Image 1 (cartoon, rainbow, N blue to C red):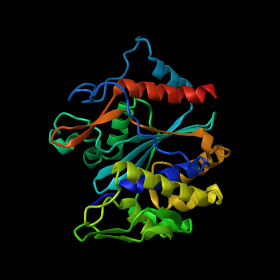
Image 2: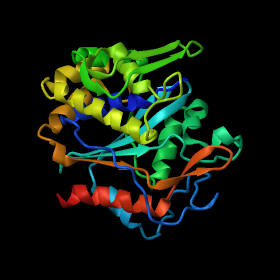
Image 3: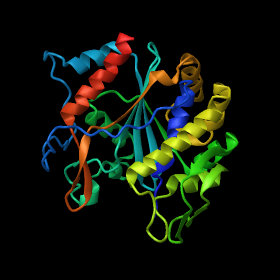
Image 4: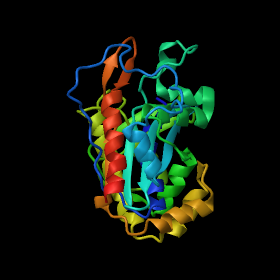
Length: 317
């Protein structure tokens, strides 16, 4: 077991620190009513060409031109793969924050990469780096601009949680899992009940998927999301008691980002006053599909509608 899926929580915390907001939003599981698309319906193969000069601009293109939004890609890494991908969008005028989760199994086939596991978005980083992932996510989300990125490491997770003095969570059951073949070896041993987790313990809690005997969250991924959100709220309680520029400076040492320290502090100061009511969370519209491997097939039409609503939200407030 080599998962860093839950590291997005720290990325959430990082970005919301930049914009001066505590995150209290609960991740919604998007379940569109549209029929499930076929194996190739609506699936991006290569990035679409740039708009042709003279062609009328779409509603989304017009909204993008009017907007001052800053879009930051948040990446939780699992070796050469992006185990978690989130687009964090901040509008400095309306002080609105929108977080869009991109499932790691999202189908995205690029010609020449035809193995089943190469058709998942989480494989893009290993062959084309951060810029490649940014390009693909931009395309999936309607060719919106992505200005910067943030990557989180194991060391970053530990240090960030420890810098907060730990995070209190309610562990729903005893967690016991061992994988001596992981790199580094993974050992999770946490007791049921309310505990204030250190950085190392937080990593165990966030990486947990199942026990050695196969038991775990009865509702699978939804249970893990619930645990993630509980941890996030606990972290937010601590975060709100800190001075944002100071925390941003600390976190800057433990993440990799295209933003300068000056940019980070600027965003933190620029968005002071953002509240939980200004934060919205989304999941890329689509459905899970099994075709040799488990894939997540995104719905381009529903995605475009979602992005348009997000951009309108900032312009209307």
